Image (cartoon, rainbow, N blue to C red; front, side):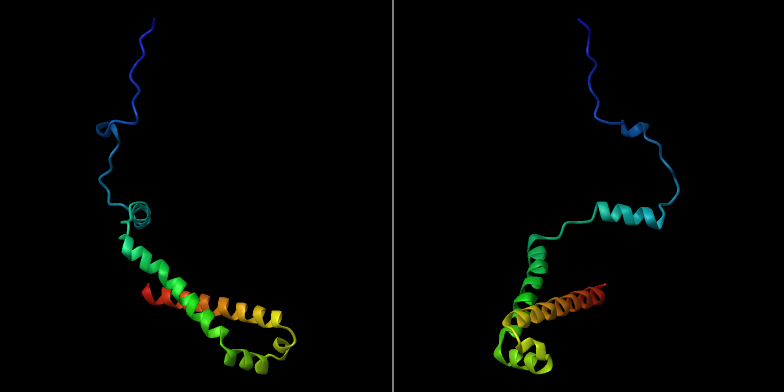
Length: 109
């Protein structure tokens, strides 16, 4: 029978090459993206719930009757079919949500 050598799972730290130079800005960004801290569960839930709350508020605003009347007055084709009105509301919701989300991101950065 032959003897089996033990399996190693990587390099020994002492044998790895080292460099005394400072890391570049790009290297620091890579390290930060790999090892960024995990946010607390409450923080993540709050951040993800904000988008849902914004969408719910926009949906409720677009669902009230005065908005329907205003859209039918401004956009005559909206009064031709309820499906066209729903499509227009969906487009408005998407555009407004996108704008709110990106303005918030610009403001926080």
